[in-house]
Each structure stands twice: as structure tokens, then as C-alpha cells.
Image 1 (cartoon, one colour):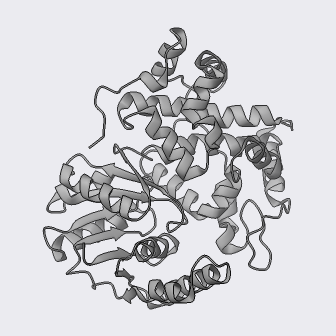
Image 2 (cartoon, rainbow, N blue to C red):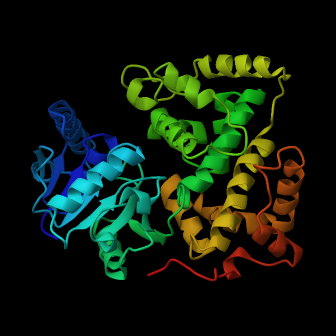
Length: 410
């Protein structure tokens, strides 16, 4: 690979460009907005300066990496042999970009999308050479986080998958091949996990109480601090795309929408679920979310209650595990170990518990199934038990031993 290109100079694009630079590549970061390119250039310089100040890089190393990232306009990719699109989660926009790439890039160029939720086939619809189109879902910060979901479209060639797996390893990532569906593995499970975290806020838990339950369990941060890191606006866009496709059949909290309306987009805007003072990323509880949650509770005529840490953990965790069981049986993931690896490397699931699927087995699948079944009495669409979870709980089976009829591995 001689000329990788990253399209989109936002947070994810510049992080991906840095991941290439850190691995020794000469990479081009392109964007139609000169202002976006200037901001990206400044952020990249600051990031490498910080690495030097902390002793992680020498000044020479930092300068070489910074210099290996060239900035370009929106048409500087005709000679690229590998393109990663990293614009925000808008299906129509991504499809327009891919159609242009299909026309202007060589037929041998691999075209990857850094989508975190969207259908890879729909992104590449109408593009010549669908066998070279693939999903490449990085986590934020892309130059640091080691997880990498490689999403196989219905027509993606095995050689394309193999190329991207090899590239992921060269970038220092842990590449895991997954199937194509809404949210793939990581964000399909995370959507359920976050939904419960936000409802717990509505019911009366504070932001700090929800996150503390997970930090005490062993996560580096709770789900709400993680949303602030990723960007509340990113979560809002995911929800908007779901609405375009018919929405979801269960109730979602409006808290993410309300924060977005107030410009509280997370760390990058200085406030999200938490406030961040003086450009620092130390979260401060400012009570705004609790006020919004109280107003939502009042609108629904609900009484305040205070969920404890075990309830917070179980509701978020088992909703994700139940979705993981659907994912496994559908063959979106090749194994429970792949699901666990995604959570270990992507979300910082505490390694001593082996990942969410392994942790569920350690607690006992009959317990998990009964918890899910009981919640389904009052919220049947969201908590519908996965048939695989039900079967394994009934016969003391194991996620680890289950192999989908049609896996996604190369």
C-alpha cells in the first residue's frame, strides 16, 4: 500500500490519519473545507506536542509523524490505492462520496467506510466494483484505541477482507471481522446498553451514580462519560438515521436529543452529560442532566426512585448480552470470543471478567435469562429474550461452545 487517503478531517478522520502515520505510512487527509483541514492540522500538532511533553515520543519522532500527514483538497485521491471515508454518520452523504470514489479511483483501490452503524451495502450502492467495498469501524481516539471492526458487505471479496485485516494489524489494531447489520456488533449492543443508562437517569439516578457503578466494576469510564468522549452529537446522528429507517419499536429517553439541542456535544464542546472546564477533560457534574431528567419524569407523571449499583449494572449489562445472543445466532459475530474482544479492546471491559458474554456465563445464563424475562413483562419489545439465551439457559449450555450456522470469519 503506497498511498492511503483519509476523507474527512473531523475527529475520526484526523485520528485515523494519525494511526496511519504512527504505523509508518505517508497518508493524505483530505476535506472539502480548508477551515476543517487547518483545525485538523492544529489538533494533530497539539497531540504530538503532548506526546513529546509526556515522554511518549522524541521530538524527532513526533516531527516525522506529523510531516507524514499531508493535507489536501477534496479531489486529491485519484491515485490512491486505499481510501478510508470518515465523514459523519449520514447515509446519503457517504453514498455520494462512494459514488465519486468509484468513478475517480482505480478499479483496484480498496474503498473503506469508517461507519459505526450504517449498512455497508447501502453506503456502496451503485458503485462499480462492490467487491472492494468494506467497513472499517475505528473507535475514538482512532490513533489510540486498538479495536477495529472490519465489516463485510454482501459482495466484499475475501481478498479485500484479508487486505484490511493485514492492514489493521500493521496499524497495531485488533481486527475482528463482523457481518453487516445496523450497528454491527459493537454499537448494536452499545445502543441497548446506553438506552438503559439514560432511562436510569430519567428514573432518578444521577450521572455520577450511573458511571460510578461501571468504574467500580472495572471499566475505565462509565457509559455517560464515554458518550461525552465519543460525542453526544454522534449519538444524536445515529438516532436520526434510525428514525429515517423507521425508528425502534421501544421507548428511548430524550436526554441525548435535549443535550444536542443545547449544544452540549461532549468533551469537544465543553459540556455534555458532564461539564468540562478550561479545556480540560476532567468531568464535572453540574446538575443540568439531572434537571432535564426530572422534567422528563414530570412529563410522564412518574415518581423519582434511586436505582442502586447492582440494578444499574445488570440492566445495562444484560440488555447488551441479550443483544449479543441475537448477534451470535444471526452469525453477525463468528464467536462469543469475538464479541468479548470487541468489548475488551473497544470499550475497556475489565479483562478479569473476560468480556460481557464470558461474564454472563460466569454469573450464570439461567440468572441472566430470568432477569431478561422478568424485565420483558413490562417492556416486551426492548427486553424480548434472545432464543439462543433461552435455549442455553435451559440446558446449561455455553456461549463459548456455540458456533453460528454461517459465520463471518475470513
